Length: 132
Length: 132
Image: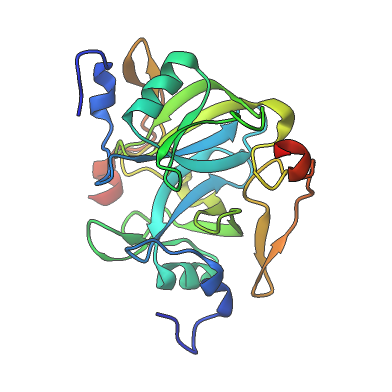
């Protein structure tokens, strides 16, 4: 539900039945797609206010300020909306160069090849050292 | 449901409650994010067989071979899966240079600026001339 404290542009977004919208984070320099996560109204409002990415964790059912435990904050350069107003793209600067919880730059490190998903990206930092 | 005619790697994908997964199409050369749509098992299987993008249209509730009416087919160079196995990225060559039904290169042509979503991308071709 909207309220008077929320910016009006939030109402232009078509939230799904759960009140969420997919948000794609892309490296602002290389164009590399780093991850896709979800946002609720509050997450998107906070992202736009702070210009650091805040998602909504569906598994934990709470706001997820990206980097809160890893330090791998995403500084937001630009926020875009698609033609159907139901997908967001964030152009970001990924602090630490690691977006994925596996310690890789991008969550999209598996390529379909010879009928298998093959990991083709190095782990930059052991997750134990990120979250330990 | 899987069957013996379907490749096993489809079972590695975590399909949502509707049997769908989001698929992001990215220009294979520029890295530009062109669109995000949805795929069911059949759409992804066809995409991987033909190496042209096939989505599932939630509004029309049927397979949507991209470019079927516009001619703006997406030739697929690579198919990636994320760490949680619930998002696909396609690296594509966008025939005609137009992915969006509004006649723009990308569906993400609106930028949040001064508390408004502002269109910042030109229409390359009038939709009347694409679909007319």
